Length: 120
Image (tube, rainbow, N blue to C red; front, side, top):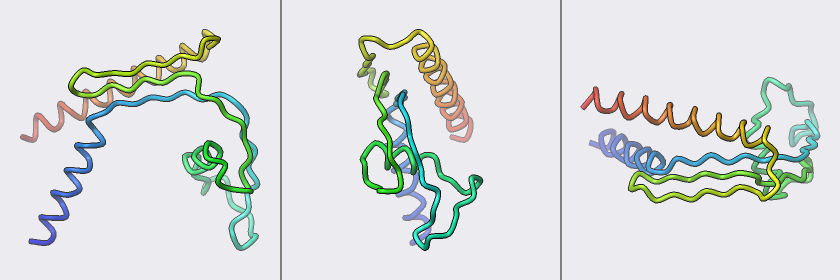
């Protein structure tokens, strides 16, 4: 029974996460000192870019320095509500890259919806 409950909780979390499609595009510089907490070197293949990006955004780590700037954001909910932001001086290259990422996210979401629909 506990496994079923855990599976349902995971499904609930996934549905909540799935209810909003968000794409953010940042520009800037990130400088990373690749050292583990114990001072040993970190292999590039073991580097978690999402972790580095989150630390740069929050300024939470002395080993990660960066100045990054949000230039584009789209957040769309299943109920049709949405939020769109573009920096006033966004370049056409960044706009194109952001729109490509948004299209890829939409295609992925549609594929997942089709998969769920086929299963149920």
